[in-house]
Length: 186
Image (cartoon, rainbow, N blue to C red; front, top):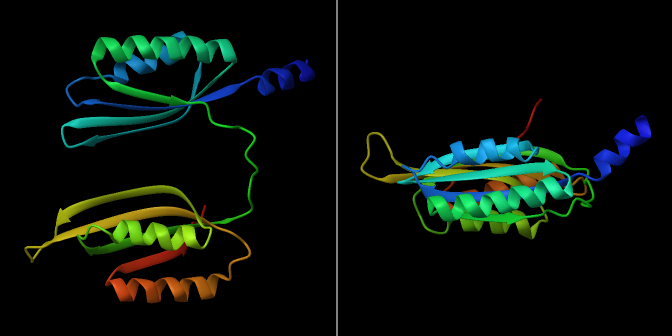
């Protein structure tokens, strides 16, 4: 019985989905029952409102015919609701890296290149970005827009953490960014 279960797990595939539609269209209410009806499982889901739109991100798992059936169902939902859906079958042969997870939070005046500069700094040092969230808002007491970001990053073990922290804080000082870089505790 145990060998049969292992074989089933090996035959599982994943499907990454992004969906974007008008906020008035409740497409999540259409996609979730389709996952169930195709006998797939949700491994991860995120949804957020962006102005008058809604964006959803899902990672689905199933065997190859369940995933194929779900992809066909998504095509029907996309045409019927006039939304945008993109899918990708991620390569599951990724090597798991040994890294240290860190949280990185920044706040700065709203400038076009702040997030780009931060991501470039991280990628130049081969630091993976697992997640980015950010938003612009009107700062209290002043009439200026402020941009705030939160990153989850994976720092490779060969990077010296103290040197990286010092280099990053110098980088932030040059761009007038206030930042907090700390390990994620679980």
